[in-house]
Image (cartoon, rainbow, N blue to C red):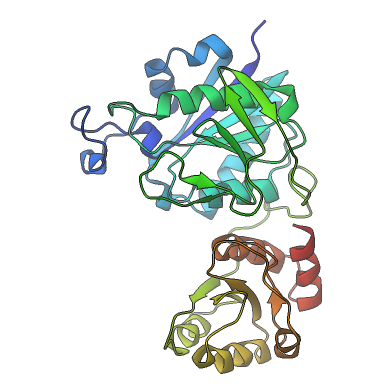
Length: 331
């Protein structure tokens, strides 16, 4: 008997139809996206590997997905587990622009124990040599595999299985865009065979301390990007806008520009939590003597956009920098 896998469609390139089969770059101009059931109808092979339960949700570009949609997805996934006894796993189709952020947020907040896999594509479903069809079939295979349990939220593109915490988009158009720079893939899918080689060591769903059910929004957290000659104007604007936390996407191995530093120290003095990350894209941020003196929290090796999400969730529980540092060390 085939495993049951739910497929939630949110939109993105994997749902998109261009003007013709050669329209693989400007397809967004068509503004034509399919819902989950319509995608499955165009990829009948999905039904060969599992009993797919398509679930309509959104059909939008991924930058339009944020906390309200994330909260809905969390609650929807838990409802699907209740409504479908024996559900093997859940796949979420998503645009690649913010796929890694949605994946990491779900990794921190979802309480369902079944495997959760996010999938996208670099080429529209209508494009010549689209990667969307095989990516979807592979994602369903991963979600259905018992070996996927206990690994947190997974990301599946280009035959590779990545950890939500560590993966990031590294290329605008190439098929191998999703990479885990420091550690590499968790596993691979070849011809429906799901094979794993490692596990992530950091805490992940469903055993996390974050509960978003009573939240209407996330605390405001902004990212300040360092570059030669930058001053503190952007950081002052973030403070004025009501930021509760600021992530400094600093120079490697983890330091803000001189023009930003005094303003960041002012932010700490006002009770705003500052997390020091790096714009480098890989590697750990060193928690130096100066950072400790400034009262900054170390991001470990989280890239700035993911450090922002973890900080926002941490701020729903505490504003104590020491406790937030503990959270960063565990997640």
